[in-house]
Length: 604
Figure (cartoon, rainbow, N blue to C red):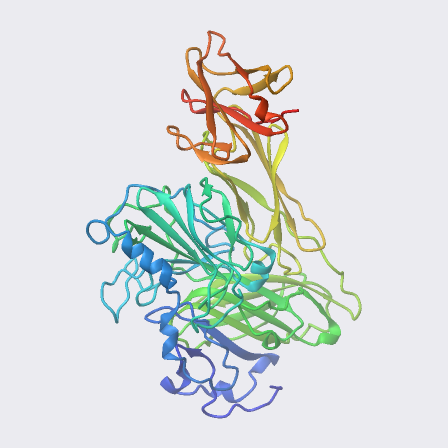
């Protein structure tokens, strides 16, 4: 489409749930001509959830029509048959019976309403044909049985966004190897995990990234353990985690609200926002029409040269009210207004998620170099401000490092046994001056030892329960990375409460000879247990279930009572058959749930 090009009657402007909406409204005359002041609205894409299957990404209709969606798409996000049949076998008692267990955190390594949004909630309407979510709205679709935690684009999926187990449990079923960048609902195979979290609670994790599953069937994992990454395998409209919770074989909605009066299954519930907001956007010299729109990677840059003659602004947001009016304003480097559009209608129904872009030619764009700003206003509310660099031809500054991030630790005052969650707080729209996809480099230390080091697109990371011990010094750091350069980061330090329990070998280990271990730091008179195993792993304790031994199928060596100094001495004679083996040992005390360091012991 070029300036002055007419738009024929009947050409679609946008499409939702297979319907072309211009036929519902008089065709606005401004669609037939270029608008004044040198700009042209090129298109709008939309997702919709009210009464339709949200997981479907409605494809762009850029000045053309599309075929109506297939009725088969209504089968999206259904659990695999083997999972459904198994969960039905677990049913006990009446429908919807809930268990008194809480999730400490969302299962995704991202920050809700920052780099992650909720596509769909559980449909609570008991019959077909209508929908109802826990807030008495319609952020769901007919029969949807879980929560859809969604990323913005495949850019984030490619760089990795982890999924964490929100409770400890044992992996029961696993499927991997399916293609993971689907955007249609055609009954494709999905990658998934089914985890038994104990006491009758089962959770399903679906649409996982291919070959990202980090656990095996039968493996026991602690709360907060990374189990996979977000993908778009199966019948899926884009990268998201489908998370279903079943108590005694019946699905539940973990959120509590006006239309779901049972107790929340979240320890600290964060409600889903229904406010208009933008999740992503950029200024670029490239035409977004050539990139497919979300969830596919979008053009970025934030740098315009005089010879470009114009620039594009694209945005991806949620909760756009029906018949919204928008306005764009362009500001010169000195802060003065160069040009502003009129307030213009989108001619839209209410959109749960939307994508839009504009081609803009402010009058001074080819004359004034420096840092410009373009603002987007919707319904007289500024929803986005986008700075960008304008330079003479060949004068672009090149890559610039990301903006700074601040770190938030949850819980702020951690206890032994807590899952530790670090959130990188940054502007949703302005985390990088070039609008690059920013990754977060998280590093965790305990007593100066690096215990986790990960570079990922998700802006939240976790240290699993039971890893941090009483009295240990905890440090966590995050640094933003745009693929070329690091930006300013942040770090936090704290000390976990309680006394340290230290396990030490006295002398040397020799098969067939007495061997001594000393444990210090227990409370006087406390019972101390020493365990051994053939390898590292995780194992729940009979009490103090908020912590775990870091051993694989541990066996009890012996129990002792700590003396007045809080010390215990264990003496054993290792069988001659242990020669050449490697043993792993760890001690714990049920008084204060203190856990010792893990000791690796090579037997010559």
